[in-house]
Length: 93
Image 1 (cartoon, rainbow, N blue to C red):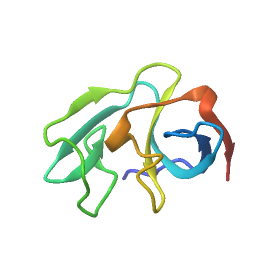
Image 2: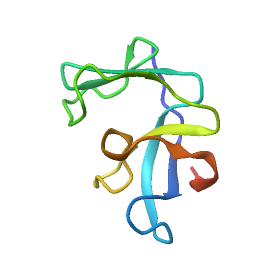
Image 3: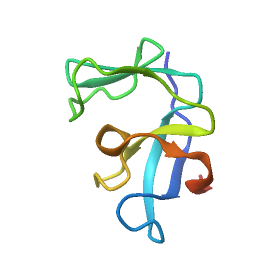
Image 4: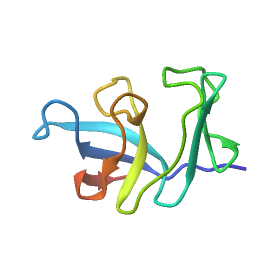
């Protein structure tokens, strides 16, 4: 069963000085796939609700990067702008 890492605060989006909340759902080396509107990590469903994203996307998370889902905003969401660099994570729960 898939278990996501803790929530995090990061510097991302259009204003890197501003902090945005999110959840890290994949770490370096994990395989990401978007199908049927859902995000899968290493074959396990990571987002049970349907969400935006490019159907059929399938990629490996690069070194020193994370795949994140924004909490209540698209500002910090890998489905919209790509991977979050490791040095942009400023705090975790």
